[in-house]
Amino acid sequence: MAYKTKLLSVSDKDIGYAAKLLAEGEVVGIPTETVYGLAADAENAGAVKKIFEAKGRPQDNPLIVHLADVSQLEEYVCNIPEIAYKLAERFWPGPLTMVLPKRDRIPDVTSAGLDTVGIRIPYHEAARRLIKASGKALAAPSANLSGSPSPTSALHVMNDMNGRIPAVVDGGCCPVGVESTVISFENGKIRLLRPGFISAEELSEFGEVICDRHITEAAAEGEQVRSPGMKYKHYSPKANVTIIDGGREAYLDYVNSRGGEGVYAMPFDSDREYCKIPCIAYGDTSEEQAARLFAALREFDDIGAKQVYARCPSQNGVGLAVYNRLLRAAGFEIIKL
Ligand code: TXA
Ligand code: MG
Image (tube, rainbow, N blue to C red):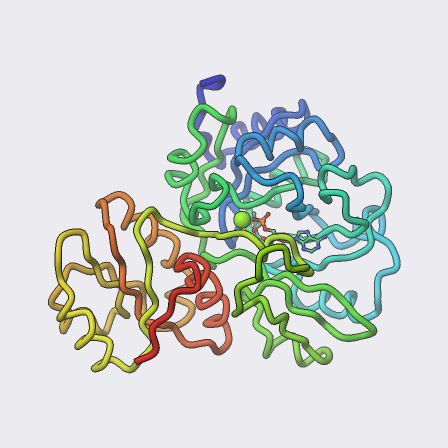
């Protein structure tokens, strides 16, 4: 292990220390409203390479660049469509990432060789203070080891990154719990590349929204996708996850007859009292499920689960983001009752 990873607080002194590490080209785990990020100076190719190494991330998967203020947008991207300004006004700071043509100051390693870059302005207070204190645009993917569920607490980051990075800023649990909504633009239309807390329904007030097919369908081997992240198996705990799509009664009948060693249910909170096999519930509303999904998946690993039967979430609003993450955690294994 190269580093003795420090757990920092959000005090001015600790934020100042984290900002100094970032300015020196180091990688720091940072809280955001969505999930924890693994941040480095987006314009320092050497620093960004360290992110890919710490995560074990494929080199062809681009990073999101985080800014402190919308006034900086034109310094990093160009040919910004009118609709992007309207979305920025409505949703920034917040959990929305817009893919736009990049300027040359963003190195190829950050954009994984693409001529576009995803930009986001987080609203998390500590993240904003840190970006400002560092004086840098921060490239930050989710702070998990590649393939693992995204971290929603500093402890999750520590579990994955201890020894791999110099510091993690502990800003508590992430309120949103799933990664930002990622969109790009096509002839005045919005293409949804990754669903998140800002829903397709909300975006559609600003223009036509095209939901990319790969949000709910697996990409075939070697198939072209519009966002490299769509290719990879993601968010997977070590257990085999199966989604069970049916109403409460059908779901409970299914899981209650399948108990056994290492077999767990992941029901809604309101199913729990009827569940006869061990379970970790993940909420009733889509917002609760978003906030708790990744922590639940990590908990199944901690208790050594071998098989998890998850009740299928709604696909409306934020539910589409929960469904999209769970589908990938399940390797698209879904049983319709
Ligand atoms: O909420 C979030 O977005 C978190 C926090 C830390 O901000 N970050 C995050 O980053 O989830 P990451 O790297 O785990 O996911 C970024 C996704 C990937 O699926 C990537 O393929 C896609 O965004 N992406 C990034 N840049 C892109 C681009 N230029 N074109 C298409 N897709 C892009
Ligand atoms: Mg990620």
